[in-house]
Structures are given as C-alpha cells and as structure tokens.
Image 1 (cartoon, rainbow over the protein chains, first blue to last red):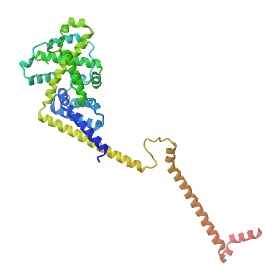
Image 2: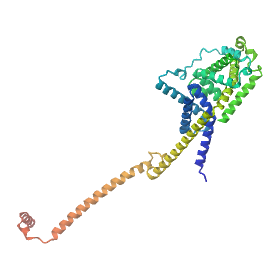
Image 3: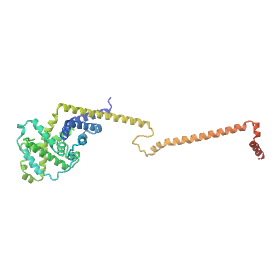
Amino acid sequence: MIPKRWLQALASDKELSDFLKSVEKRAFKRAVYTVRNDDAALDIVQDAMIRLAEKYADKPTNELPLLFQRILSNAMMDWFRRERVRSGVMQNMSDFEGSDDGGDFDLLESLATLDASLTGESASDTVSRGQIMAKIEEEVAQLPARQREAFLLRYWEEFDVAETASLMGCSEGSVKTHCSRAVAALARALRAQGITP
Amino acid sequence: MSTRRLTTSQTTRQTTFATSHLVPGFGVPAAVSSPRATGAMGASASSTLELTQARVAAKLVHHLDGMAQALPHELSERLKVARTQALMRAQAQRLAQAKAAQISTAAGGATVMSGPPDRDPFSWSGLAASLMPLVLLVAGLVAIEYWSQREHVLTAADIDAQLLSDDLPPAAYADPGFAEYLRSGRSR
C-alpha cells in the first residue's frame, strides 16, 4: 500500500506541474515584453519556476498564482539589476519602482479618446489576423513598464485590483489609473494604425 | 488556477455581454460618446469607462493569448524543460526535507531525556530530567571519595595491627625513641 504522505506529494507535484504549465507561456511573454530578449526571458521564467518549486511547492494551489507573479516580478528586477551592473546600461528602473502619478489623470478625457479610437472600421479587412496580433504585442511591449505590468496582471493574469496593487506595491487607485492609461494608449496606438481591438 | 481563470473570464464575458447591447461593435453607449455628454452623466461615467476598458482589454488579451499559445516549438520545448527542472528541484527539496525529518526523529529518540520538542522546557519534569545527570555525577563523586577514604583508613589500620602483633626486633631496644616510649608508658 502506498503511504498517504507519498500520495499527497504526488498530488502536489501534479498540481504544481499543471499550474506551471498553465502560466509558463504568459509568464514568458510578460518577461519578453519587459526585458525584450527571448533567452533572458526564458532564464527569468525558469528561475521563477525553480524558486516557486523549491520554496512554495507545498503551498495551497490557490496561493500559487500570486506567489508566482511576485517571484517573476522579482526575477525581472534582479535581471535588470544584474544587467545594469554588467553592462553599465542605465535602465529606467524608476518605471518599475513606480510613483503614484495618477493624480492629474482625466478619466473623462481618456474615455473620449478611447471612444473615438474604438469607433473606426475594422482592420480585419485589410490586415491579417497574425499581423494584428503582432502589432498588439508590439504596442503592449512599448507601454511604460508600470502601465504594462498593471494591464497584464489585471487583465491577462486576471488578478483583481487589490491583488494587482499588492503585486505592484502601489495603491488600488494607481492600478486603476495605470490600467486605464494602458488601455487608452493601446487603443489609440492601434487605431492610428487602422486596427481596432 | 483554472477555476480562478474560468471565474474571472466568466465575469469578463458577463461584462462584455452587459455592454454589448449599448452600441454595435464595442459596447460604448452613444450617450457617452462626447465629453460633454459624459460629464453630464456624472458618476455613471466612471463605471461605463471601466466597463469599456474591461471590454477592450478582454479583446486585447484574447489576441495576446493567441500569440502566447502560438509560441515557436523550440521555445515551448525550452519552457517544458524549465518546468521539468523546477519540478525535479521540488521533488529533491521534498526528499531532503523528509531525510532531515527522519534524522531529527532518530536524534529525538536517542536523547531520551530531552522529550518532545513542543514540551515546556521549564516544567518540573523537564527540569528534573535536565538536572538528573548532574545529580548522578555529584553522587558518584561523593561515593568515590567515601570509598577512597575508607580504603585508606582500612589500610592504615591493617598496617598498625600488623606492627602491633608482630615480634619486637632486638634493634628496637637500641632506638632512643622506643626507649622513651617505653619509659613514658611505664610511668603512665
């Protein structure tokens, strides 16, 4: 008879494997948008996976998403720090360590811009689906880091506002502002290229 | 995780559905299509903004998902290898922890006096158990000292008895000390 402890360990391995499988591609893309290098992004994701597996494998499954995204964010920060030391390239780390700069943001103006950007003709007539997706990726990658983080965590990883704020180390209001700006900027940029989401 | 994503996706879909009847295409209500009209709507504008954002974001994210799922085979394989390595590390970690726990249990069994780790170290029984070796050591030293002294006394008494019971050698009478001893004994 197989001991209960081993059965639990097997179940835990399966859950962890399923979880990592479900997030690995999005995590890789998120890392690519941030570091803009496939190899570095792979290293970062692998590092994050190993850290999660070594330290938090026994955590309940519902805690894994938040833990993993936090680890991934830290891994990206570590990569930037190492890169800064290694190459002396000045990265704009302040984008990541973020200030709550949403005070003067005009929601109504954003709404108007967003509305205008969304009322055009569909680009599917002229641009292929693959090209649209590539353009969207490109625009996402060009968002300011904080906006991109908020957008990806909130809408792609589907964390709620409080969780996103916790992950980003800022207020919930800032998360809403970053998300709003990100969506408006994406819609505006894509609209300018004749693409509507 | 899948449950969580499903639930939130359902919410997003519900949001999309809730707004999709407003204006064909993107769910933006006609009444809020100009800044003036939006201002007139007051608080409802912000919720409309959020709904619109959620709708647009859902569409964008759908495209991003498509790109993520269409990763080149080589990258997918490398991610798979990374995942496998992470799982192996987790297993190794678990094995190491299990071994450490076994060693700890064995050590716990060997130290009979120490008791379980959750035991109150300041309880009377714990204190007595801790002091027991010291008490035994002191008692042992006292016993050794007593036995040593007794042996010494017995040896001295034996020598005296042998001296007293033995025949007096003739040379003893020539010893001035012995002569003095005999004189003092006779006078007493």
